[in-house]
Each structure stands twice: as C-alpha cells, then as structure tokens.
Length: 413
Image (cartoon, rainbow, N blue to C red; front, side, top):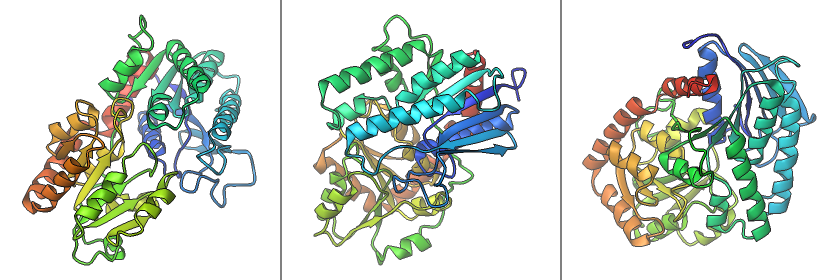
C-alpha cells in the first residue's frame, strides 16, 4: 500500500466474478488490486446473470446474500433485469429497482453505521451513479463514478431509445450524476470531452483512467487449440468477433466479409440481443460459426484460436464507448481490424501499438479489403501480434490502473 492509511471502500457494480461480463472482469480485478494494496472493500453487485440474462443455476432462491472475503465482503442481489433486452420499459424499471436495492444494502455493507472513505459506482446502469453518490453522502465518504459507456448516447445512436421524454429524463439524470459526484472516471479523452460538454463550468473532477488487461491470464498461445479444432474449420484461417452480440456492433460487416472471403472461417463468439437475427441473416453462409460465451478461464484459448480479430463499432459510438475486448486481443498477441470512428481511442490505440488496421465504421468495402490484406500476409500478422503484446504490457497493467484509482479514492486526483 502507498500514500497513507488503508481505505474503507464500498463498490457498487452490476457484475462481479464469477459473472463473465467484461465490466465485471474489470471491476473484479480493480478490487483485487486495491485489496492487494491493503484496502478494505465491500462490493454490492448482482447475482451472476450475464451469460443467459437470467440468474444462473445455484444462485437463485434468495433476493440477496452476503459472503465474507479476506479483504471485506461481497453482497449479491437479484439483477431484476427481465428475460428480454428488447423491452426497454421493463429494463428501465429493472435498473431502477436494482439500483434502489443496491443503495439500501450499500448503507450496511461492511457493517453499519461505520463510516467509509469512498463509494465507487459503475455505469452502466446509469442509475447506479446517484445511488453511489447518496450512499457516499450518508456514510461520509467520497463518491467516484466509473463510466464504462456514456449513456444514453450509445442507446440513442443505435436507435435503442427514441422516445424524447425518456431521452430527456436520462440526460437529466446523467448531468445530475456528473455534477454531484466528487470524481468521474472515464476510459478515454473522447469520453472525457463528451462528458465535459454536458457539465460546462465543472470539469476538474473528470479523470481519464483507461481499462487494463491481465497479461498473466491472457498471453499468446499456439493457434491450434481445442477451441479451434471444435470449429471444424479445417485448414481455413479464422477471423473472429468475440464479445457482446448487440446493436452497437456492426456485425453485418462480418457477414459481408464472410460472403466475400469464402475460403476463411468467420466466428462470432458471444451472445446478445442481436444474435438471433444475425444467425438468421447468416443462414446461407457455410463459413460462419456462432459460439456462445465461454468460461472466463478459456478466454486466452479462445482469443488465440483466431488469426485475425475484428472490432466493429457503429458510426458515432467511438466517442462514447471503448470496447474492452481490444485490450484482451492485444494481450493475446493477435492482429485486428477495427471499424471505429477515426480519431477516437481504439484507432489511436491500434496505431500506437502497430497491432492492426483501422477502417471507417460501417464501410463494407474497406472492412473486407483490410481483412483480406491481413489474411494474405502471415508475416505481417505475426509482426503486428508481437507489437500488440509489447504495447499492452507497457501501457495497460492492472497495478498501474489500481494505483491511479487509489489516488482518486483518497481525493488526491
């Protein structure tokens, strides 16, 4: 531990190990690193539910439960998410109910009425921001709001939310949370600029702390993995999208590339609200494989199984989202094609690391040409993979990120 006495921290997040959501992986490691630095942490989160959008077997039966750990405690509550992601009203009510229950339990996390030094809350869902602020005020600590995706911007850009009243209410909640939080942590300068424009006159509390990757758990491997053999791809090169299959990702680009490059095997590894429609659209493409989420301990194997990875993000979303999967791809030592708004964080990262090719979002011709170019250049892919690994080892270590969070939670900025 550095910087003084141990802190008492309450963490509010929608996912935590053993849940497999990318944001859960991020927060689990941040908590682990802070615990290793000597701090006491009490996590309030949801019961595991990410993979099937329902509470997993073995975890149901009670609306919440608390387990003690060596560094504090974890309280898990029912996510109240509903079975369908398409019912936006149901999802909004679920987020509100979840955040309210989390807020109540945050007041007793670690034993009450003991004071805490800080409350760290994560968005999405946006509703956890004010929950964290209220808990911090009632328990005498600082409120730090970690923003993984700027909401509602991403939902508006994808058309998931179009009701003007709903958008206005979400934007009002967003501004109120940004203004009241002692610190707002954002993943990139793009996200910081986005938020700064919404709270003019109070931007000194906006902090940029990128996500990280566990380079010990995710390391380069031989591509001839059991996972790859299970794809029945034969000797074909493998192009992979691994992550959430939603409407923010331009996965139509993957199908267009599969149609144009029939000698390659294209893999969509993940689940989400857009998967069923995407599978129907790909029914005529024999070189496309769909695979569900794998256990987190297989992540390195899954990523190693691809010759080329793709990160397609719809136009306009590069300034409100930084897909954390990109760090994992770099750690695995694989090249990528990123179809993301130019001048935003992911293209800057790819350029700085020399790890792949960037093309404009939603541009089929450029995307297909970039994938074909990498498939035709094994030596170039190997060189990019080595550069990717070297860059991520130097720039995205968990320990460095935890040190930055520690300073923010102390109030040292």
